[in-house]
Length: 327
Image (cartoon, rainbow, N blue to C red):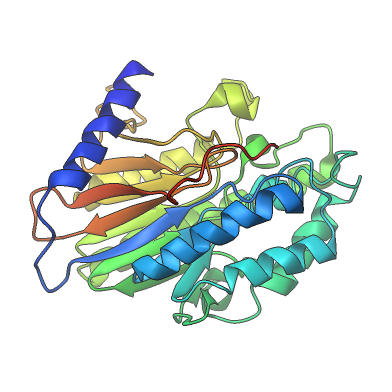
């Protein structure tokens, strides 16, 4: 934990004092997630102020890594429509991948005691109607549903921007919905898990074929934190995702940025290792975990493929906004 905090602090110092990227292919985007959390009267105003700050920063696009509501907020159609309105209020493109709070955890009493799989269907119908991002200036995307046998996976998307391939994979907290006591959940998990593995592998293959210089992969879950996600090594919903990602990232060799949320702890580090017995650190992979929950902030990510330091990071705060929103 101490090393992670140090890495994050160093990254902030670099971002705050480094020279701006000057290469033609350099650009910036914003990453957020795990928000807004709480009652509308408490959660919405700071979120709206953050969106206004992001719009003022005018990034090339923004990535929301999911959990667009708290786990104790009712998973209603009205709530979904409210959150879709927020996502479409971003001035540039908004790339969104679902989190567990939107569907996996909707069986909870506080969330409305709703059927998670029905909520997943509703989410797909409402948020992923076209092969493009959300936001006021949407970008065209390639969806897994349109290029593979996994026709249900409208939410898995990718696009290439200035030589950088940007990919989302629908991998969520709550052990990725791998709930062995629920046969329907197990069936859903195995189908989506197989699709995600195929999508991750095909995205790296496409990046190689197109000679992409960088790959960015975004998902909601923190697949490295077993304590939060409640799984044991033999009952993890993330093993195949991690196997595929580590193998493909190592073979890719070029810079990879892995963005996630879930555990609400801003950090930048290099925690990924090969999945063999040697467990070598994947030095080409940088992990960014975004703010979230009570910390209603964003991270500005700058990518310069020509720089020795491909990625730089700058926290994006709203002046005077404190971490006070309750879950």
